[in-house]
Length: 267
Image 1 (tube, rainbow, N blue to C red):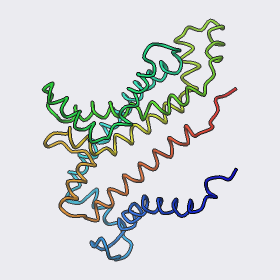
Image 2: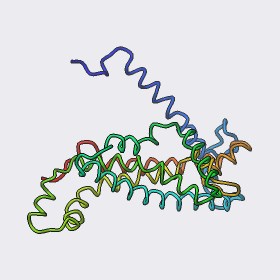
Image 3: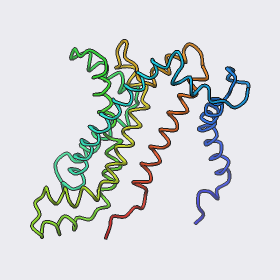
Image 4: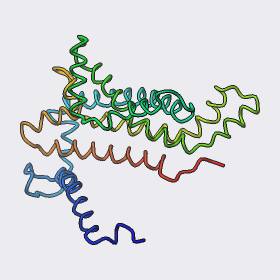
């Protein structure tokens, strides 16, 4: 049987899709090194816009926004990964139980629902219960929608771990906690770390939900960039975007390497 790459037009369509997806990113990256203030004319190679990110007139504003983004992402990723790990243990190692399919659908619901719908629903929820929007509401929202991103790598890793490791530990008089801490947890660690990395980068890059629940005077890096772009695209914004792109690529690559397809548990 021929592979899909042998079908007429498949290669051309693939290259077109890749171009549409990545050409804008390439343009932003290239022009972040442009010495000119123009976003259309090349004026030579320069790093001055990266220096302006840290020393320019907007450095304090973007620095505070970056601090908010990083701290929220760290806490959201950690909390979401803990919840996702517990859920994966129940779903994969917990055997059959009532509403298992419904639980799986509920965990993965944020992946299927449009993000704008999640954003509106989250804002309505906070308004209904009388919670003032700000740092805390962003954190709660990020924890919620990061759970499925952390759950998928953890559950995939767990499904590849045979049950006889824990059985052997129990046969050697280990308690359930000892079997989990000394046997299962080290084996599933790559999936847990991969899930944390994905949750972190999803939280760090989120704009839509954050923009709805952030409240007045509260900014994260994506919302600060959006606010600056509304006043015109500046070269320093391209530099910030390139730095965020580099961090995203690094974290996604690490997540893939740690939990890459075909990775086998030890035998």
